[in-house]
Length: 160
Image (cartoon, rainbow, N blue to C red; front, side):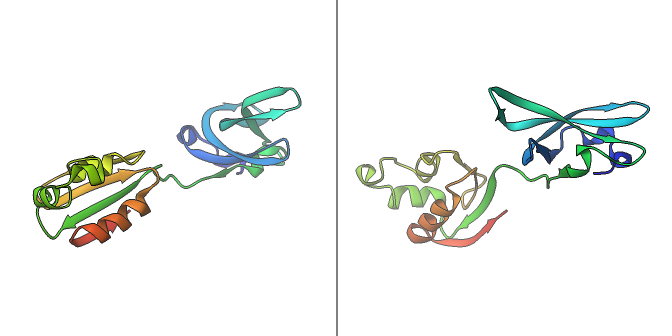
């Protein structure tokens, strides 16, 4: 990044910067601008050790006259959510799936489609009408999708 590209709107953006020769990721949380240089404070996603010390942040800086410094290694990362969204339209009402698929509670350990989906770590199920549900999750979404395709009738399934 060039010194002329630094502005307050960068605060809160995810980025990659150099620290002890390694490219590390974090979030921009501050800017210092003076007559000769500009610096961006990056809070690391995870602390990094250098020698006996543990570091949580670094200042990526650049000299305004010739761009010398670590700032030229800083790159903004795409802002994307940490979770996936799946919109499912079932071929039959969700209440019918609950009564048919989950008739035997001992087999699945739950008595409803919502209970089964919510039993996956980090995954949540919200019915928005009698045939449609929004399922969100950080991971495990592929396993949920495979199971839904195997055990339920689906009119459409869209992921984002």
